[in-house]
Image (cartoon, rainbow, N blue to C red; front, side, top):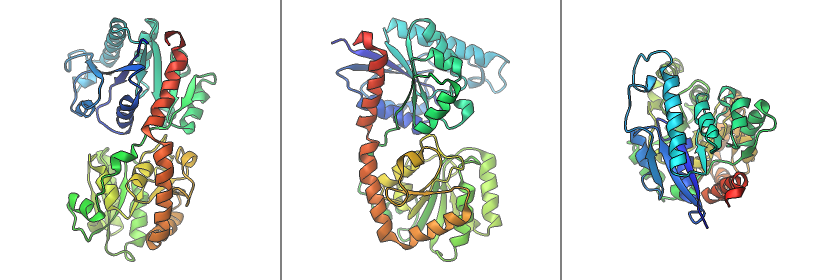
Length: 386
């Protein structure tokens, strides 16, 4: 049987949740049916993370060129970013035609992705867009969705927003995979603490996520300030990188609360985030508007730690409060304080919930299940090829 050729467009600057999900998808696709190519705009350091995959890699350019607008210049000429996307759109379509690609899968659809959809579509190539954002401004427009053969959404929460813009959209929900086997390293809490530079007797709480004002790190600091006297051996780690202005604001808040000596900032994205989970007694994930998917609660459960997630967004589709995880209103400081105290003061009961979540999510979010769901979508839009 002829294999179906899928080209994945990966144009990110970092290796984060969307890229982890792409890596997992390519790894677990049925290679007896599908042949994969990851297509990059040009070489970047984080792309080495895909080197272990049994697929082709293709670069649309061998480096940053004069026509790449803000990718190449600090002060680009007006219109040069459009020129960049136009050229890359044609390069992508021509590559797909030359390699006889059956479908292009855009790993992270963005507001500036339209030419990567429209130009291949003009050439008669099937296009699948992966919608991963909870921002309405990032949801594909109706005109873009009409040019796509399928929109894969990371949750029903995102799917509802997608269909708000185009009600007859070919939208499907496929939850991002979380490979629980990846986190089964058997590292003890003491070893995890030492790997982060702490004494093995240290007690740690963590707030994990991008440094942005909606991620709830400020709430974690405020809550920690209220319980810090009762839990005098604990420190709070803010694990994530992002906006320098937000980092400054959070540091000022810690000073205002009088706990600046007990709040540690990594100030950047860290590769060994699983060590943060394993070292912690509790992890906060308090995004104010909810998450499109949100990996932190599930990565945390894979590392045997309780995670407090927002009762908004995708979390409420997957987590049953006090059964498979912990939900809380991310804007209700009093409720968060109460739940934090309950979690820290009842470790035996809490561990039962964490174990329940680990058993459930390791199956629900398995990479193989996720890949098979995506394969069904490929098969549906490529019936004539199969």
